[in-house]
Amino acid sequence: MSRWRDVTGGVAGSEYAARFEALARSGKDMHGEAAFCAALVPAGARVLDAGCGTGRVMIRLAELGYDCVGVDLDSSMLDVARAQAPELLWFEADLAEFDPARLGIAADFDLVVAAGNVLPLLAPGTEARVVDRLAATLAPGGLLVAGFGLDAAHLPVPPSTTLPEYDACCAAAGLTLVDRFATWDGAPYDDGGYAVSVHRLDA
Image 1 (tube, one colour):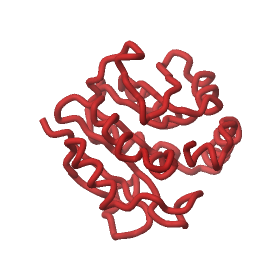
Image 2 (spheres, one colour):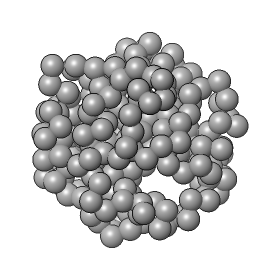
Image 3 (spheres, helix red, strand yellow):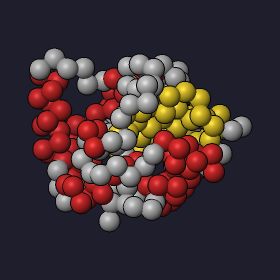
Image 4 (cartoon, helix red, strand yellow):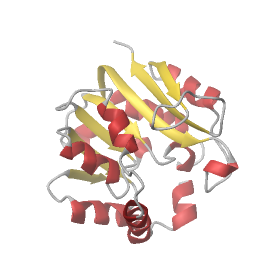
């Protein structure tokens, strides 16, 4: 079972969406991840939102002109996403077994984004498999962008994935580190408790 289900029981979609709506009403920018991704690939590019949740990042990217597909294991999160943007493609699937061909979609994404602590909340032991599956969905030269916490201050579960371990998973999947930041605003990485990593699929 994923650590996400351990934390939420798989029924937190409405509560999760309400929390972000409250943050938006308070004036907080809710689109940092989308803006980050939009700076990496041009409008019209194909984007896979892996662990899309309620769709906050993907819906914004679609508004900016990106061709988006979302996938998540939590049906309660996807219910919210589909209600907000029924015209977009949302799929319920385990990232460790994700195969676009089974869903009738092409595996040639220009960018895959995994925001919101996707990696640390996977089922234990599936991290390498998930990175491999995500890399397999990329077009040659495509980018995998993942932001996640590395310590207890940035995670709802005990830390489970270090950056060297994540980089090793990426290397095994044919991905090369391009850059790393401390925030989705692009602040330089400072060995802190949160990292946004950009890896490229070797052509």
